[in-house]
Length: 360
Image (cartoon, rainbow, N blue to C red; front, side):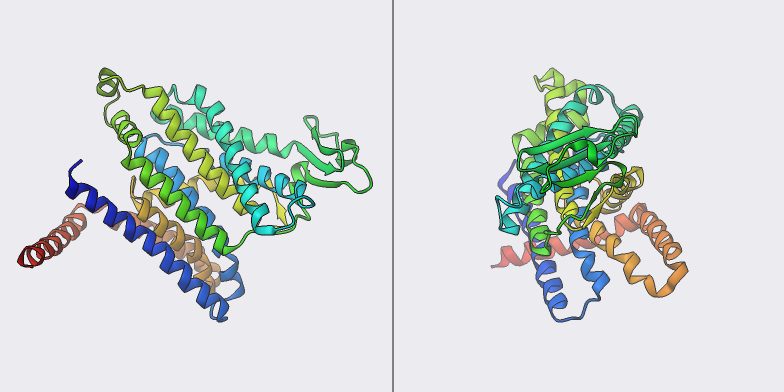
């Protein structure tokens, strides 16, 4: 890669980081100043979670070039693993920020393991077949979590798998001081919230650093080569399965970390929050932001997360307006004439900057 290309990529990445930092500072000031409503403030952490989800899915869809429809499954693994870890360590780690950090690491680890295990059979497929199988695995993960009953006491974790629907929290055999964390189909309830907007902004920055540096690395170039031409990649000695697995596992790990942050934002959490509709929502963020465009994913996820709340004044028509906005954005962002128009403006602006630089 030429020095000019490296400089351009570095400048582009710096702009993306700057957008996140400025947005965090701006919304923190507005929130502390009482300008934002309570419901809008409540969307800040979920918005960060969805941004990380969009970045991670873009790694699979945009960079690897494979359509995954079960991404919410990895988010659910991270969410419930994080909730269990945070509750179980509440007496050992009294600091809420540290406990959140540990929960996100554990959530990412469990999601990465799930991604690896699922990737073994799934990544043998391509295209529509892979999309259907990932959708199935996402639903399987949701159903498995709905059958889990988990509690903790001084003896450690107690886990019961409620496969027949007849088991209850009493079957955990907890002591009097024990706490039931996950209660089967009811999910996790009575959990203390520990997620913060600062933690969300940090996670977004970490996700961007990981993905952007991965894409620009030797591994990232190999992943792109596999996406562009599998046969040519194999002919030069690139292990297609290995690099597809790397992208899939990293994507799952980031989704798990986002899930842990998401789970720590609610006192009650159900597996139904991570269904097929959530996976489609994240995919919409990726498509609207642009495949392979991480900055676009950040902006699209942030705007579309808060848009329904901004349209609340329109009452029953807000979701209709939301759908119309989505359709219009899709049409305009995929219009060849508009793309050519903005490309000409960008080229003209770039050429003027180069002329000014040469003059100096």
